[in-house]
Image (tube, rainbow, N blue to C red; front, top):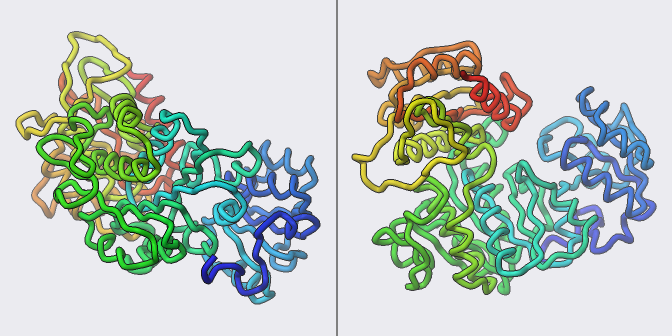
Length: 486
Protein backbone atom coordinates (compact mmCIF):
# COMPACT_ATOMS: atom_id res chain seq x y z
CA UNK A 1 0.00 0.00 0.00
CA UNK A 2 1.72 3.15 -1.24
CA UNK A 3 2.89 5.48 1.49
CA UNK A 4 0.44 4.07 4.01
CA UNK A 5 1.82 0.80 5.34
CA UNK A 6 2.35 2.20 8.82
CA UNK A 7 1.34 5.35 10.66
CA UNK A 8 4.85 6.42 11.58
CA UNK A 9 4.99 4.32 14.76
CA UNK A 10 5.32 0.90 13.13
CA UNK A 11 1.62 0.00 13.27
CA UNK A 12 0.57 -1.75 10.07
CA UNK A 13 -2.40 -3.98 11.05
CA UNK A 14 -1.97 -6.03 7.90
CA UNK A 15 -3.53 -8.92 9.85
CA UNK A 16 -4.92 -9.65 13.30
CA UNK A 17 -1.54 -10.66 14.75
CA UNK A 18 -0.99 -7.08 15.94
CA UNK A 19 -4.38 -7.15 17.70
CA UNK A 20 -4.14 -10.31 19.80
CA UNK A 21 -2.76 -9.39 23.21
CA UNK A 22 -2.45 -5.69 22.35
CA UNK A 23 -3.59 -3.00 24.78
CA UNK A 24 -6.09 -0.91 22.78
CA UNK A 25 -7.79 2.22 24.07
CA UNK A 26 -11.20 2.98 22.54
CA UNK A 27 -12.15 6.64 22.95
CA UNK A 28 -15.84 7.26 22.30
CA UNK A 29 -18.25 4.36 22.77
CA UNK A 30 -21.04 5.38 20.44
CA UNK A 31 -22.00 3.35 17.36
CA UNK A 32 -18.57 3.15 15.75
CA UNK A 33 -16.54 2.86 18.97
CA UNK A 34 -18.75 0.10 20.38
CA UNK A 35 -18.54 -1.84 17.11
CA UNK A 36 -14.75 -1.53 17.04
CA UNK A 37 -14.52 -2.64 20.68
CA UNK A 38 -16.63 -5.75 19.95
CA UNK A 39 -14.30 -6.77 17.15
CA UNK A 40 -11.14 -6.03 19.14
CA UNK A 41 -12.30 -8.12 22.09
CA UNK A 42 -13.12 -11.02 19.81
CA UNK A 43 -9.70 -10.69 18.17
CA UNK A 44 -8.02 -11.05 21.55
CA UNK A 45 -7.14 -7.45 22.39
CA UNK A 46 -7.14 -6.03 25.92
CA UNK A 47 -9.62 -3.19 25.47
CA UNK A 48 -10.01 -0.16 27.72
CA UNK A 49 -12.95 2.12 26.95
CA UNK A 50 -13.63 5.79 27.63
CA UNK A 51 -16.59 8.09 27.01
CA UNK A 52 -17.58 11.39 28.59
CA UNK A 53 -21.32 10.90 28.09
CA UNK A 54 -23.05 9.33 31.13
CA UNK A 55 -25.93 8.11 28.96
CA UNK A 56 -23.51 6.22 26.73
CA UNK A 57 -21.69 4.73 29.68
CA UNK A 58 -24.95 3.36 31.08
CA UNK A 59 -26.20 2.04 27.72
CA UNK A 60 -26.83 -1.63 26.94
CA UNK A 61 -24.06 -1.86 24.30
CA UNK A 62 -21.46 -0.63 26.79
CA UNK A 63 -22.77 -3.00 29.47
CA UNK A 64 -22.43 -5.88 27.01
CA UNK A 65 -18.86 -4.85 26.19
CA UNK A 66 -17.95 -4.75 29.88
CA UNK A 67 -19.43 -8.22 30.29
CA UNK A 68 -17.27 -9.36 27.37
CA UNK A 69 -14.12 -8.13 29.06
CA UNK A 70 -13.73 -4.42 28.28
CA UNK A 71 -12.42 -2.39 31.19
CA UNK A 72 -13.23 1.28 31.70
CA UNK A 73 -10.75 4.07 32.29
CA UNK A 74 -11.32 7.53 33.71
CA UNK A 75 -7.86 8.73 32.65
CA UNK A 76 -7.51 8.00 28.92
CA UNK A 77 -4.60 10.42 28.58
CA UNK A 78 -2.42 8.18 30.73
CA UNK A 79 -4.04 4.78 30.14
CA UNK A 80 -1.78 1.97 29.00
CA UNK A 81 -2.22 1.68 25.23
CA UNK A 82 -0.26 0.25 22.34
CA UNK A 83 -2.64 2.12 20.03
CA UNK A 84 -6.03 3.82 20.21
CA UNK A 85 -9.27 3.83 18.24
CA UNK A 86 -10.71 7.35 18.51
CA UNK A 87 -14.24 8.40 17.54
CA UNK A 88 -14.36 10.42 14.30
CA UNK A 89 -16.30 13.06 16.23
CA UNK A 90 -13.11 13.86 18.17
CA UNK A 91 -10.79 15.97 16.04
CA UNK A 92 -7.02 15.82 15.82
CA UNK A 93 -6.70 19.12 17.72
CA UNK A 94 -8.48 17.71 20.77
CA UNK A 95 -6.13 17.72 23.79
CA UNK A 96 -6.66 13.99 24.32
CA UNK A 97 -5.60 13.13 20.75
CA UNK A 98 -2.61 15.45 20.98
CA UNK A 99 -1.65 13.86 24.27
CA UNK A 100 -1.81 10.35 22.82
CA UNK A 101 0.41 11.38 19.95
CA UNK A 102 2.92 13.01 22.27
CA UNK A 103 3.14 9.60 23.94
CA UNK A 104 3.69 8.04 20.47
CA UNK A 105 0.39 6.15 20.74
CA UNK A 106 -0.92 5.56 17.18
CA UNK A 107 -4.44 6.93 16.69
CA UNK A 108 -6.74 4.98 14.35
CA UNK A 109 -10.26 5.64 13.08
CA UNK A 110 -12.80 2.78 13.27
CA UNK A 111 -13.62 2.86 9.56
CA UNK A 112 -9.95 2.95 8.61
CA UNK A 113 -9.27 -0.02 10.89
CA UNK A 114 -12.01 -2.03 9.20
CA UNK A 115 -10.84 -1.08 5.72
CA UNK A 116 -7.40 -2.48 6.56
CA UNK A 117 -8.71 -5.87 7.63
CA UNK A 118 -11.70 -6.71 5.39
CA UNK A 119 -10.93 -9.05 2.52
CA UNK A 120 -12.89 -7.85 -0.48
CA UNK A 121 -13.38 -4.81 -2.73
CA UNK A 122 -14.52 -1.61 -1.01
CA UNK A 123 -16.75 1.00 -2.66
CA UNK A 124 -16.46 4.23 -0.65
CA UNK A 125 -18.88 7.12 -1.15
CA UNK A 126 -18.14 10.63 0.07
CA UNK A 127 -19.10 14.22 -0.63
CA UNK A 128 -21.20 16.79 1.17
CA UNK A 129 -24.73 15.77 0.21
CA UNK A 130 -26.29 12.57 -1.10
CA UNK A 131 -23.79 10.12 0.43
CA UNK A 132 -26.31 7.91 2.21
CA UNK A 133 -28.71 7.68 -0.71
CA UNK A 134 -25.94 6.89 -3.19
CA UNK A 135 -24.40 4.30 -0.85
CA UNK A 136 -27.78 2.58 -0.51
CA UNK A 137 -28.41 2.71 -4.27
CA UNK A 138 -25.06 1.08 -5.06
CA UNK A 139 -25.57 -1.64 -2.45
CA UNK A 140 -29.08 -2.45 -3.67
CA UNK A 141 -28.01 -2.59 -7.30
CA UNK A 142 -25.20 -4.98 -6.42
CA UNK A 143 -27.58 -7.11 -4.36
CA UNK A 144 -30.17 -7.14 -7.14
CA UNK A 145 -27.43 -8.49 -9.41
CA UNK A 146 -26.98 -11.43 -7.04
CA UNK A 147 -24.03 -10.32 -4.90
CA UNK A 148 -23.55 -10.58 -1.15
CA UNK A 149 -23.05 -7.01 0.03
CA UNK A 150 -22.13 -5.25 3.27
CA UNK A 151 -23.60 -1.74 3.42
CA UNK A 152 -22.69 0.67 6.19
CA UNK A 153 -19.95 2.99 7.40
CA UNK A 154 -21.12 6.49 8.29
CA UNK A 155 -24.58 5.58 6.98
CA UNK A 156 -27.35 6.22 9.53
CA UNK A 157 -29.37 4.26 10.21
CA UNK A 158 -26.81 1.61 9.39
CA UNK A 159 -23.87 -0.43 10.62
CA UNK A 160 -20.33 0.82 11.32
CA UNK A 161 -17.80 -0.69 8.96
CA UNK A 162 -16.11 -2.75 11.69
CA UNK A 163 -19.32 -4.80 12.01
CA UNK A 164 -18.21 -6.38 8.71
CA UNK A 165 -15.25 -7.89 10.56
CA UNK A 166 -17.67 -9.97 12.64
CA UNK A 167 -19.81 -11.22 9.76
CA UNK A 168 -19.19 -13.63 6.93
CA UNK A 169 -17.22 -12.55 3.91
CA UNK A 170 -19.07 -10.44 1.34
CA UNK A 171 -18.55 -9.92 -2.37
CA UNK A 172 -18.53 -6.14 -1.93
CA UNK A 173 -18.30 -3.65 0.93
CA UNK A 174 -20.18 -0.41 0.22
CA UNK A 175 -19.53 2.30 2.80
CA UNK A 176 -20.39 5.93 3.31
CA UNK A 177 -17.36 7.89 4.54
CA UNK A 178 -17.40 11.32 6.16
CA UNK A 179 -14.81 14.08 6.28
CA UNK A 180 -14.33 13.31 9.98
CA UNK A 181 -13.43 9.70 9.16
CA UNK A 182 -11.22 10.65 6.23
CA UNK A 183 -9.31 13.23 8.26
CA UNK A 184 -7.31 10.47 9.97
CA UNK A 185 -7.48 7.83 7.24
CA UNK A 186 -4.19 6.25 6.25
CA UNK A 187 -5.24 2.81 4.98
CA UNK A 188 -8.60 3.24 3.23
CA UNK A 189 -7.91 2.36 -0.40
CA UNK A 190 -11.24 1.70 -2.12
CA UNK A 191 -11.60 -0.21 -5.33
CA UNK A 192 -14.08 2.48 -6.30
CA UNK A 193 -14.15 5.95 -4.71
CA UNK A 194 -17.22 8.09 -5.38
CA UNK A 195 -17.08 11.85 -4.72
CA UNK A 196 -20.50 13.43 -5.17
CA UNK A 197 -20.03 17.14 -4.48
CA UNK A 198 -18.30 19.66 -2.25
CA UNK A 199 -20.23 22.50 -0.60
CA UNK A 200 -19.40 24.25 2.69
CA UNK A 201 -20.02 22.01 5.71
CA UNK A 202 -18.48 21.31 9.11
CA UNK A 203 -16.52 24.57 8.97
CA UNK A 204 -16.74 24.73 12.76
CA UNK A 205 -14.22 21.86 12.65
CA UNK A 206 -12.38 22.17 9.33
CA UNK A 207 -12.36 26.02 9.32
CA UNK A 208 -12.13 26.42 5.55
CA UNK A 209 -13.77 24.80 2.54
CA UNK A 210 -10.29 23.98 1.23
CA UNK A 211 -9.38 21.96 4.34
CA UNK A 212 -12.77 20.28 4.31
CA UNK A 213 -12.35 19.35 0.63
CA UNK A 214 -8.82 18.10 1.27
CA UNK A 215 -10.18 15.55 3.75
CA UNK A 216 -12.49 14.24 1.03
CA UNK A 217 -9.93 14.23 -1.77
CA UNK A 218 -7.36 12.33 0.25
CA UNK A 219 -9.36 9.21 -0.59
CA UNK A 220 -8.02 9.49 -4.17
CA UNK A 221 -4.36 9.67 -3.20
CA UNK A 222 -4.16 6.09 -1.93
CA UNK A 223 -5.77 4.53 -5.00
CA UNK A 224 -3.69 2.65 -7.53
CA UNK A 225 -3.91 2.17 -11.28
CA UNK A 226 -6.19 -0.85 -10.85
CA UNK A 227 -8.79 1.28 -8.98
CA UNK A 228 -11.53 3.65 -10.16
CA UNK A 229 -12.78 7.09 -9.09
CA UNK A 230 -16.30 8.29 -9.93
CA UNK A 231 -16.46 12.08 -9.91
CA UNK A 232 -19.08 14.79 -10.37
CA UNK A 233 -18.19 16.66 -13.55
CA UNK A 234 -20.62 19.46 -12.67
CA UNK A 235 -18.80 20.34 -9.43
CA UNK A 236 -15.76 22.54 -10.07
CA UNK A 237 -13.91 21.48 -6.92
CA UNK A 238 -14.48 17.77 -7.56
CA UNK A 239 -13.59 18.10 -11.23
CA UNK A 240 -10.31 19.82 -10.31
CA UNK A 241 -9.33 16.83 -8.15
CA UNK A 242 -9.34 14.49 -11.16
CA UNK A 243 -5.55 14.61 -11.39
CA UNK A 244 -5.04 13.15 -7.94
CA UNK A 245 -4.09 9.52 -7.45
CA UNK A 246 -3.53 6.83 -10.05
CA UNK A 247 -7.09 5.49 -10.38
CA UNK A 248 -8.96 5.65 -13.67
CA UNK A 249 -11.37 8.59 -13.55
CA UNK A 250 -15.04 8.37 -14.56
CA UNK A 251 -17.59 11.19 -14.55
CA UNK A 252 -21.30 11.77 -14.14
CA UNK A 253 -23.18 14.93 -15.04
CA UNK A 254 -26.62 16.47 -15.22
CA UNK A 255 -25.46 18.82 -17.99
CA UNK A 256 -22.63 17.32 -20.02
CA UNK A 257 -23.14 14.48 -22.46
CA UNK A 258 -19.37 13.95 -22.53
CA UNK A 259 -19.59 12.30 -19.09
CA UNK A 260 -19.78 8.53 -18.64
CA UNK A 261 -23.27 8.86 -17.12
CA UNK A 262 -25.49 11.83 -17.85
CA UNK A 263 -29.00 13.26 -18.07
CA UNK A 264 -30.30 14.19 -21.50
CA UNK A 265 -33.76 14.67 -23.02
CA UNK A 266 -35.44 13.43 -19.86
CA UNK A 267 -33.47 10.16 -19.71
CA UNK A 268 -30.53 8.79 -17.74
CA UNK A 269 -27.75 7.51 -20.01
CA UNK A 270 -24.53 5.54 -19.61
CA UNK A 271 -21.96 5.53 -22.42
CA UNK A 272 -24.66 6.35 -24.96
CA UNK A 273 -27.03 3.62 -23.77
CA UNK A 274 -30.43 4.72 -22.48
CA UNK A 275 -30.89 3.56 -18.87
CA UNK A 276 -34.28 4.86 -17.76
CA UNK A 277 -36.65 7.81 -18.04
CA UNK A 278 -36.04 10.37 -15.29
CA UNK A 279 -39.76 10.31 -14.60
CA UNK A 280 -39.60 6.58 -13.81
CA UNK A 281 -37.04 7.11 -11.02
CA UNK A 282 -38.78 6.64 -7.66
CA UNK A 283 -36.53 9.03 -5.74
CA UNK A 284 -37.76 12.64 -5.86
CA UNK A 285 -35.69 15.66 -6.85
CA UNK A 286 -33.12 16.56 -9.45
CA UNK A 287 -30.34 16.16 -6.90
CA UNK A 288 -31.32 12.51 -6.59
CA UNK A 289 -30.94 12.06 -10.34
CA UNK A 290 -27.32 13.06 -9.78
CA UNK A 291 -27.02 10.42 -7.06
CA UNK A 292 -28.53 7.86 -9.44
CA UNK A 293 -25.98 8.70 -12.15
CA UNK A 294 -23.13 8.26 -9.67
CA UNK A 295 -24.51 4.88 -8.58
CA UNK A 296 -25.01 3.74 -12.18
CA UNK A 297 -21.40 4.59 -13.00
CA UNK A 298 -20.04 2.73 -9.98
CA UNK A 299 -21.98 -0.48 -10.50
CA UNK A 300 -21.42 -0.58 -14.26
CA UNK A 301 -17.68 -0.57 -13.51
CA UNK A 302 -18.35 -3.70 -11.45
CA UNK A 303 -20.26 -5.40 -14.26
CA UNK A 304 -23.84 -4.95 -13.01
CA UNK A 305 -26.34 -5.23 -15.85
CA UNK A 306 -29.09 -2.80 -16.80
CA UNK A 307 -32.01 -4.96 -15.56
CA UNK A 308 -30.77 -4.81 -11.96
CA UNK A 309 -30.05 -1.08 -12.23
CA UNK A 310 -33.47 -0.27 -13.69
CA UNK A 311 -35.27 -2.38 -11.12
CA UNK A 312 -33.68 -0.49 -8.22
CA UNK A 313 -34.22 2.94 -9.78
CA UNK A 314 -37.92 2.18 -10.27
CA UNK A 315 -38.50 0.89 -6.73
CA UNK A 316 -36.07 2.48 -4.26
CA UNK A 317 -38.00 5.23 -2.44
CA UNK A 318 -35.16 6.46 -0.25
CA UNK A 319 -33.87 6.14 3.31
CA UNK A 320 -35.58 7.34 6.50
CA UNK A 321 -35.35 11.09 7.17
CA UNK A 322 -34.44 11.89 3.54
CA UNK A 323 -37.51 13.34 1.79
CA UNK A 324 -39.49 10.69 3.63
CA UNK A 325 -43.26 10.77 3.21
CA UNK A 326 -44.89 10.67 6.66
CA UNK A 327 -48.61 11.24 6.15
CA UNK A 328 -51.24 12.84 3.96
CA UNK A 329 -53.75 14.63 6.20
CA UNK A 330 -56.64 16.70 4.87
CA UNK A 331 -55.00 16.82 1.47
CA UNK A 332 -51.62 18.01 2.80
CA UNK A 333 -48.47 15.89 2.46
CA UNK A 334 -46.07 15.94 5.43
CA UNK A 335 -42.48 15.17 4.46
CA UNK A 336 -39.57 14.50 6.80
CA UNK A 337 -36.10 15.49 5.60
CA UNK A 338 -34.42 15.77 9.01
CA UNK A 339 -31.14 14.55 7.49
CA UNK A 340 -30.68 17.91 5.73
CA UNK A 341 -28.03 19.17 8.15
CA UNK A 342 -26.53 21.91 5.97
CA UNK A 343 -28.14 24.82 4.08
CA UNK A 344 -27.33 23.54 0.58
CA UNK A 345 -29.06 20.23 1.34
CA UNK A 346 -32.00 22.21 2.68
CA UNK A 347 -32.24 24.18 -0.57
CA UNK A 348 -32.16 20.99 -2.65
CA UNK A 349 -34.88 19.37 -0.51
CA UNK A 350 -37.12 22.42 -0.77
CA UNK A 351 -36.66 22.59 -4.53
CA UNK A 352 -37.42 18.87 -4.88
CA UNK A 353 -40.67 19.07 -2.92
CA UNK A 354 -41.76 22.21 -4.76
CA UNK A 355 -41.39 20.29 -8.01
CA UNK A 356 -43.23 17.18 -6.84
CA UNK A 357 -46.64 16.53 -8.29
CA UNK A 358 -49.31 14.34 -6.79
CA UNK A 359 -53.02 13.78 -6.89
CA UNK A 360 -54.63 15.40 -3.85
CA UNK A 361 -57.22 13.15 -2.18
CA UNK A 362 -60.57 14.44 -1.08
CA UNK A 363 -61.58 15.17 2.48
CA UNK A 364 -59.58 13.59 5.26
CA UNK A 365 -58.18 10.67 3.26
CA UNK A 366 -54.81 9.40 4.45
CA UNK A 367 -52.43 7.40 2.29
CA UNK A 368 -49.14 5.69 3.11
CA UNK A 369 -47.24 6.63 -0.03
CA UNK A 370 -47.58 9.67 -2.29
CA UNK A 371 -47.20 9.95 -6.02
CA UNK A 372 -43.73 11.45 -5.91
CA UNK A 373 -43.21 11.76 -9.64
CA UNK A 374 -40.68 14.40 -10.63
CA UNK A 375 -42.00 17.37 -12.52
CA UNK A 376 -39.71 19.02 -15.05
CA UNK A 377 -42.16 21.86 -15.61
CA UNK A 378 -42.21 24.94 -13.35
CA UNK A 379 -45.98 25.23 -13.79
CA UNK A 380 -46.32 22.05 -11.71
CA UNK A 381 -44.74 23.76 -8.70
CA UNK A 382 -46.24 22.82 -5.37
CA UNK A 383 -46.98 25.17 -2.46
CA UNK A 384 -44.65 24.34 0.43
CA UNK A 385 -44.81 25.28 4.08
CA UNK A 386 -41.22 24.85 5.27
CA UNK A 387 -39.99 24.13 8.79
CA UNK A 388 -36.28 24.96 9.07
CA UNK A 389 -33.52 25.77 11.55
CA UNK A 390 -31.17 24.19 14.06
CA UNK A 391 -27.64 24.51 15.42
CA UNK A 392 -25.16 26.68 13.56
CA UNK A 393 -22.11 25.15 11.87
CA UNK A 394 -20.54 28.42 10.62
CA UNK A 395 -21.93 27.84 7.13
CA UNK A 396 -23.22 30.35 4.54
CA UNK A 397 -27.02 30.32 4.37
CA UNK A 398 -27.70 32.63 1.44
CA UNK A 399 -28.61 29.86 -1.01
CA UNK A 400 -31.15 28.38 1.38
CA UNK A 401 -32.70 31.78 2.11
CA UNK A 402 -33.05 32.48 -1.61
CA UNK A 403 -34.66 29.07 -2.14
CA UNK A 404 -37.14 29.90 0.64
CA UNK A 405 -38.06 33.13 -1.11
CA UNK A 406 -38.48 31.31 -4.41
CA UNK A 407 -40.31 28.15 -3.33
CA UNK A 408 -41.89 28.55 0.10
CA UNK A 409 -45.48 29.59 0.73
CA UNK A 410 -44.53 30.14 4.38
CA UNK A 411 -41.43 29.46 6.50
CA UNK A 412 -41.53 28.40 10.15
CA UNK A 413 -38.17 28.93 11.87
CA UNK A 414 -36.93 27.05 14.95
CA UNK A 415 -33.64 26.51 16.77
CA UNK A 416 -30.44 28.51 17.22
CA UNK A 417 -30.32 29.67 13.62
CA UNK A 418 -33.85 31.13 13.56
CA UNK A 419 -32.82 34.72 14.28
CA UNK A 420 -30.12 34.67 11.61
CA UNK A 421 -32.48 33.19 9.01
CA UNK A 422 -35.17 35.72 9.90
CA UNK A 423 -32.72 38.56 9.25
CA UNK A 424 -31.68 37.08 5.91
CA UNK A 425 -35.26 36.57 4.77
CA UNK A 426 -36.19 40.12 5.77
CA UNK A 427 -33.19 41.46 3.84
CA UNK A 428 -34.52 39.60 0.77
CA UNK A 429 -37.92 41.24 1.21
CA UNK A 430 -39.54 37.95 2.26
CA UNK A 431 -41.93 38.46 5.19
CA UNK A 432 -43.88 35.21 5.18
CA UNK A 433 -42.15 33.63 8.13
CA UNK A 434 -42.66 33.04 11.85
CA UNK A 435 -40.17 32.22 14.58
CA UNK A 436 -41.35 29.47 16.91
CA UNK A 437 -39.93 27.87 20.08
CA UNK A 438 -39.82 24.23 19.03
CA UNK A 439 -40.80 21.58 16.52
CA UNK A 440 -44.18 20.85 18.11
CA UNK A 441 -45.21 24.49 17.77
CA UNK A 442 -43.97 24.52 14.17
CA UNK A 443 -46.02 21.45 13.18
CA UNK A 444 -49.11 22.97 14.79
CA UNK A 445 -48.55 26.25 12.94
CA UNK A 446 -47.95 24.40 9.66
CA UNK A 447 -51.30 22.68 9.98
CA UNK A 448 -53.10 26.01 10.23
CA UNK A 449 -51.31 27.50 7.23
CA UNK A 450 -51.53 24.50 4.87
CA UNK A 451 -54.46 23.83 2.59
CA UNK A 452 -55.28 20.83 0.38
CA UNK A 453 -52.61 20.41 -2.26
CA UNK A 454 -49.83 21.90 -0.13
CA UNK A 455 -46.83 20.08 1.32
CA UNK A 456 -45.33 20.61 4.77
CA UNK A 457 -41.60 19.96 4.57
CA UNK A 458 -39.29 19.57 7.56
CA UNK A 459 -35.83 20.34 6.13
CA UNK A 460 -33.79 21.95 8.93
CA UNK A 461 -30.65 22.80 6.94
CA UNK A 462 -28.68 22.85 10.20
CA UNK A 463 -27.35 20.41 12.79
CA UNK A 464 -29.71 18.95 15.37
CA UNK A 465 -27.67 19.38 18.53
CA UNK A 466 -29.35 22.55 19.81
CA UNK A 467 -32.54 20.65 20.71
CA UNK A 468 -31.97 16.97 19.79
CA UNK A 469 -29.46 14.14 20.21
CA UNK A 470 -29.10 13.65 16.45
CA UNK A 471 -30.98 14.04 13.17
CA UNK A 472 -32.73 10.70 13.67
CA UNK A 473 -34.20 11.78 17.02
CA UNK A 474 -35.24 15.07 15.42
CA UNK A 475 -36.97 13.25 12.57
CA UNK A 476 -38.75 10.92 14.99
CA UNK A 477 -40.19 13.92 16.84
CA UNK A 478 -41.47 15.35 13.57
CA UNK A 479 -43.08 12.02 12.67
CA UNK A 480 -44.73 11.80 16.08
CA UNK A 481 -46.10 15.33 16.00
CA UNK A 482 -47.48 14.83 12.50
CA UNK A 483 -49.05 11.51 13.50
CA UNK A 484 -50.77 13.25 16.41
CA UNK A 485 -52.53 15.75 14.17
CA UNK A 486 -56.23 15.17 14.16
